[in-house]
Length: 212
Image (cartoon, rainbow, N blue to C red):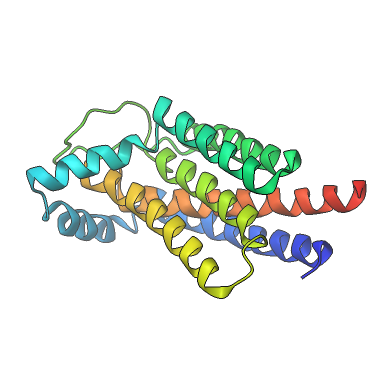
């Protein structure tokens, strides 16, 4: 698929995902998904054990603060060694930074308090959408996009998608397990970040076509 088609398709899917996020946010604000949240929370937190708690604490730390910055820098170094294209790394930095800003803006607009049931760690701020989920999707989603066209075989692409998907899902699950997010916070984070990532890819593809 050429850059023009990729840009158009990414833009179209981005708009659809943004619309889904708005609908999802309305359902949350009107308390129509509380039963779903409670069911998933009870299921995930019902698995609680000392070993699993340690694992979830480690996983959740990979989506925040200094450790997230270190992981991002390490990925950038690897990507530079593989891709050797500065513009592709600029996309990674742009999506990661703007996604974090978008998350804070959405939290301020929606103002959803964090859950209080069985909280294993203390975290401040608002709950919706999950910042960790958005950060994970932005980082690993962008990496998947950048590496995809450089992987020639189907098996390699499947491995790439599987690894990225596992990191994204595990970070989201860790937030629910630790009691600092509702499942709908995590799902909303994925929707918002996916929409923003695809919009960024669309603009990036158009920019690359323009300057090439």
